[in-house]
Structures are given as structure tokens and as C-alpha cells.
Image 1: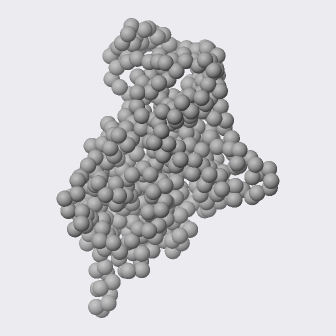
Image 2 (image 1 turned 135 degrees about the vertical axis):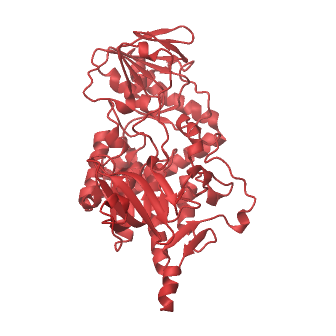
Image 3 (image 1 turned 30 degrees about the vertical axis):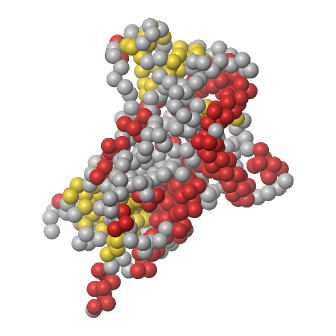
Length: 507
């Protein structure tokens, strides 16, 4: 036996039934479902960071908050009792409670960054190679990989290569890398971007900054409303217990979101006017929408930016926030100049320009020694990929709360694991069926459906889709809510290896 454990990954490897990658909102929720629905399975969670929370542990910019309501962004099994839109700190407290209340902490290995996952068909197991915070190799084997690592490259946010950026003498930082110790009180702050991050960070800066300017290439649709839920308030007023409040309000919000999605397609002009009416309640009856608040894209083609209490519009109406719509021409020592010649000086420039996509956490994958190219695979319902056995990927929703799919995937994966046990299968693959012969193979999502920049930039890294419901992630929670429980694991798209049971029977 080699003296160097790194030369033999199985040496001293810890084996578990299920290995969960990531201790963010997806990984914590998946662990709960595994414990609840497959209590006989042992598991471990490998987390690259020093703490749980994922995105919520990473993002520390001013005002960081959810852009989904917590009745649907929270788990179905853990009632949310606060305001619908929550701060990052409140979400971290919620996740901490889930970990503590359910004994998940002993299963988490922090500071473990995975660099290679190798599947062996001969053994029907995954070999997972990681390094801990001290750089020491750690080896695990598992029967099933549950990928919950998200899809953002947190170490390398997207920052365009603007001309002259090195000339700027002030503080330049991407929102994703903001240092909470930074003092911005009384400073002139320029935020580049207009999406969900900008909608959060701009009003937070405006509370203390001398002035905030939001520079955008194109406007965004905003949804403004009070940060409360009338149904939840009324149910609590009459003494309804919190689990029931959570379940009922969650159902009500999902119904309303589904209706909004349908109306955005059937009567987009009416929806746009309703959104403007909500903005006027905070920005004033004479609030000017041209040119800075009239998006070029179809409503709901990108995610709505939620503004609790219309905060960004209240600041704009009060003169604390101004908006410029143009492209950047070049940076200067004191700020930047836009294409039309407008000079904007700032003490601090914050790029809220989005993310780079990182498929499967940037981990190297191989199957029987052959490297996996995810773009060459075809996704099964956005959860499994052809040619990659015993692996499920949690990819949430863009138009509905991410966590709705975490719960749905929890049911899907645990039901699949129980089915494999029932039939004595050690391996499951997904593969195109005979009826799928000649099916068009297309990019992961069509631009007309959903087209934010980070997704369009990363399509070549994502699995591809077919033109049938089984072979795509359709981003429709309401359709998947009905379809997922009906998935037939004995369908032709599921290929099982039952060799172990046959060998035992022969003996």
C-alpha cells in the first residue's frame, strides 16, 4: 500500500451513502429532506467556506436582503415569522436555527474545497478529493452526489473591462467583494448597475452617503409594495398557529406569482402600467419614467427587482439618488465619463454588474477516467445529466423563489434513492429514449424565456436541453409542482445497474 494517501484516494477515505456539496440554503434544505425521508442514509456536507450560508455568508454589502419573500424563500418545513423581505442577517439566523434544531451541524465539514470527483462504474461509487483549510488532502467516497453548491463564481464576479479603470484614484469595488468596514458616510457613491443588487444597495447607501448615482445601461422593472403580508398579519391577529400561517401564506403567494407570470405574457402592457402605479405611490404622482425607468425588454424576461416600501424611489424623489442611463466611455482620476459626455465624479464606485457562472463549483468531474464536459450533456428536468451517474444538481428558479425547488428536489432525490434500494440498484443514469430520437438539442434556456447577462454569458458552460418537458429546466414551478411527484422512476429514461443484486442471487 502506498505510503502517500494522496496516491491512493480510497486509502483512509470516509464513505457515506450521500455526499452533499455546499452548506448554503440548498445544501441545508437537502440535508433536512435526506434526514426526514431517508433516515437510514448517512451523509456528510462538504463546504468550501469557513461557515454556512453560501451567498448569504458571502454578500456583505450595505442593505443586503432577499429579493424574494421569505414565506416562499424559506423552507416549507420551517415557518417564517418575520417581514416578507428579510435582511441577510435575518436569513443567516433562520438557517442557523434549521441547522441547530435538526442536528445538521455534526455532518458539515467546513473549509473543505473539492477539486475532483471521480465516478467508477466498476465500484459504483464516487471518489471525492478535497483539501481542508490547511491544504491537507481529504478523501471521501459516496454512493450518491447531491450538488448544492450554487452556480455563481463568488471569487471572480463579473466586472467589464472598462477603458481607463486603472486611472481612477478613488475606491473601486465589486458589490460582491464589499468590505463591511468601509466608511461611506458623507461620500459621493456611484453604483454601476440596475438589477437586484443595485435595487438593494442604492437605497442603503442613500441613508448615509452625501449622494448616490445609479448608472445603468438599460432600465429595470421594479415591484414596489409594503414589506408586510396582510393575510399573514390577519391570520396571526385571530390566533392561527405559525405553521398554518406559513403554509397558507406560502400558497397564497405562489398563487399570486403564478397569476402574475401568466398576466405578463397575456397582458404585458397592463402589468407595466400597474407596476408604474405602485411606483407613483412612493415617488409621487408626477414621477418621470422616461428615460430612466422604461426597460427595453419584455416584462418578466428578467427578474423583477423588488423594492420594499419603494425605498429607491423615495430616495430618488427626495433628491438623494439620481439615475443616469448610458454606457461608460472611460474612467478618469475622479470618476468616469459616459458615452454622451456626462462626467460623474465619485469617492466610491461600486460595480453591481452581476456574476460569472461557475458550473458545478468549478470542480473537475470524470466518469471512468473520462473528463465530464457539462455542455456535452443533456439535462433531465434540470436535475440530472446524461452520462453522469448517481448525481443530482439543485438549480432553483429565477421567477419564483429558489428554495421552492430545493424542497421539490428534496422529494425527488429521496424518492429516487428509496426506489433504487427497493429494486437493488447501485447505479442510475438518465439517457435519451427511443422516442427522443431526432429531438432538437438546444441551449439550456432560450433567450426569449429568460436572458440575464450572467446566464447568456455562461450558456456554453451549462448542459443542453431538448424540446420535450423531460429534457429541460422550464423555470415553471407551477408546472413542475404537478409533474415531479408523477415522475415514473421505471420510465425508459432511467437506466439502472442491478448487477450487485443479481450476483448476490446467484450465490
